[in-house]
Image 1: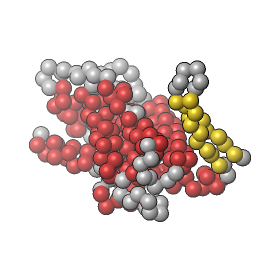
Image 2 (image 1 turned 30 degrees about the vertical axis):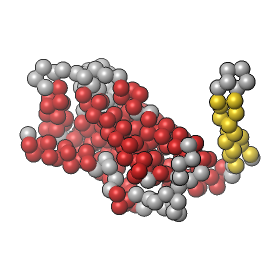
Image 3 (image 1 turned 180 degrees about the vertical axis):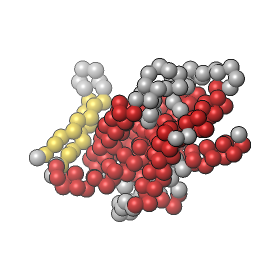
Length: 240
């Protein structure tokens, strides 16, 4: 069991891209192949455990987490925490926190990243049809909550550096842990979900420049105040 814990800890640690990979805020954006190594390893590890080593890893980890009594945490905090990193990726820009890109590009890369998470995650869930540990349905692999959370966390890290990235990754990691303690996912589900999320964020960075050229759009973000309710609103103005 001790060996199992060490292996799991090492794999989970891969969810945090090494500090050496971090981009400095304000320097020219670049994407290297090494940025894809960690998330690809997470997806590969999750797929391996799910398909080949389920009884050796997933089942013992679930038993260790739930204990002899099989107590499920039963909190809904993960339902809300999963949105925090993506909200940070966009919200910090509106708070004038120094970032790698401007508002338009951040909105575009966030949209592309979340769209990729949804399409890939939902597609894999339908294709693989894997039962959840609690038996509630057959949409366990990969974890969509983790994919969403880690996509947002990686966007925060890339745009604002580790100063904010640590907080975003902490929130994403909390989502992964809560999914396990709520008995909603196996270990392999959360590992693959985290990897898919990080890959989606990196893919959006790769596609940002060509998509901008293809669209040829100028986008202005226009803040306004609703005269009736007094609510602060934001409008996107597209110039074709």
